[in-house]
Image 1 (cartoon, helix red, strand yellow):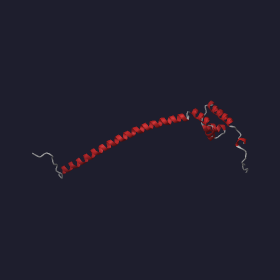
Image 2 (cartoon, helix red, strand yellow):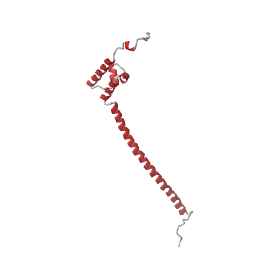
Image 3 (cartoon, rainbow, N blue to C red):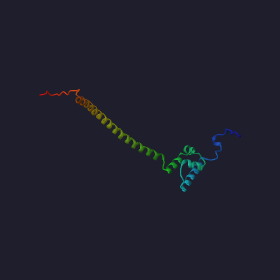
Image 4 (spheres, helix red, strand yellow):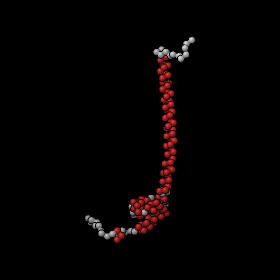
Length: 142
C-alpha cells in the first residue's frame, strides 16, 4: 500500500489537474447540454455530469449554483420572497385565530356566568317544589 506524501511546494506550484476557468467552462457546458436535451437540471446532476462534487459548486462556484437555481425556478430571491409571502399569510391567519379565540373566551365566561345563575335558580326551585324552602316575597301579603 502506497502512502501519499505531503509536498513542501506552495499551492500555486502544485498541479491541480484542472484550473478554475476550465472547471467553470465545463460546468457551463454541462448545464447547456442538460438544457438542450430537456433533462432534469439540479446542482447534484450537473456536478455528477461534470465529475465534481456538489459542494464544490456550492462553495467555489456560487454564481454557477445560483444560475442552476434560477433555471430550476428556485432562485434565492424567489425562495425568500415566496417564504416571506407565506409568512405574512400565516401571520394574518394567526391574528384572525387569536381574535376568534379571545371572542370565544369572552363568550365562554359570559355563558359560565349565566349557567351558574341558572344552577342556583334551579336549586332554589327544587327546594320550593319539595317544600324544604319557602319563597318569601318582597311585597307584604295583603
